[in-house]
Image 1: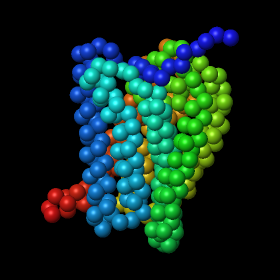
Image 2 (image 1 turned 30 degrees about the vertical axis):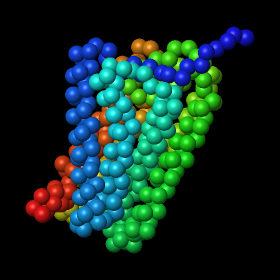
Image 3 (image 1 turned 45 degrees about the vertical axis):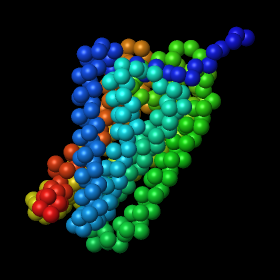
Length: 305
């Protein structure tokens, strides 16, 4: 038996430790973070105040906007603080809190994208029954289920991570804390936690993945049978925006959680972490708003008022 000194402070090895580079990254990521907050806040405000957008599609889009603001705020402020102060330390409780909220918002977004896919399926394949099936009662219940299930899912993983102790290397090769990062530096056997990620995360992720993509088989078939070029283009526009968001999100999540990492892959892992934590929350509203005439019209009405 040997005595082990438990570590209560971890070091976030960010994107760079070169001061001039860190200053440039601070300016870049500050702009990205502010743009993310502003654009998502505008979408959330427009959906909330403009009655033309009071329908299920934009209700879920406002949830996505709120989720993206929260998502980017998990890692963004801490990363900016580390870049401007040139400090890279984070306490273990703060790291655990980051893990909880990051997993929470990740799971919630996976489920929300599935709900948005179901909404598009009903709108295109069963338009005559759309208002009955996607009533405000159903939409609000779906929203509550998404947020509550995401909370429970994250709580399970976070509580299981409390069994981990840290007594050796305390450097995390990222700019924020996440479960795979803790597994790499713990001196406790993380097998149980890893199995839980693959079993629970895999089952939830696969189920959400099927509920997200399977409806598009019927959606695409229905769109192809729509008469008139205008109707087809409008239907394809809303679907391609959603699919683009889904592909980017799932691609980065699969790489981070389900692709084994090694020392020579730290750089690639950091890149996907940046995409997931900072770039996706900015891309999502841009993809939807730039291709959506209703949002553009609502924005013009808000400016005229």
